[in-house]
Amino acid sequence: MRALNRPTIALGYLTFWLICSSASGGDDVLTITINNNTSDNLLVTVYDQNTNPAQRVLASTAIYGNASMPVSISPDGSGMGHLSWTAMTIDHDMRRCGHNDKAGLNDGDTVNVQADSDCGG
Image 1 (spheres, helix red, strand yellow):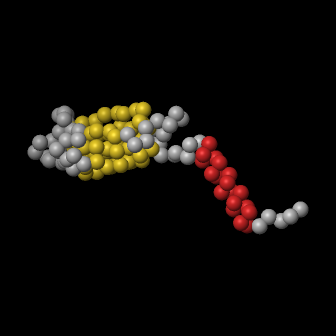
Image 2: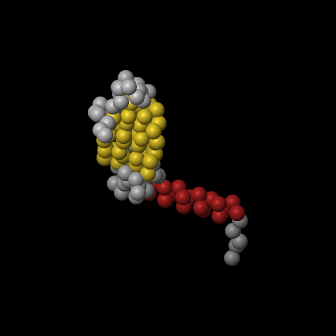
Image 3: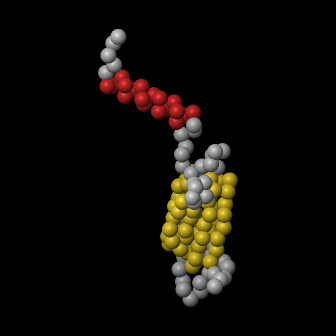
């Protein structure tokens, strides 16, 4: 029996990895754009709801008025993303808050965030 050399073994592993990633789609993250579509400067926190427990992917990060920021989240078994977000205005004198939950997200989707409600007690 012929002995296998290292390049042949490495090529075999690479081929196996490429076949497996092609079969599964190769997408283990979804890139979602978080868009502040208001003129307010916001502190935004985003959670990936497809992880158990939910994983924070953005933590009290400033997103200025009419700006956006990409985040990466995990797809579920059907390839769809699910996130929740909270937002709070940076301006302490005019404090407003907002939150929402968004499921059924595809790679490249945009989620608009805003803080248009009272923050409560």
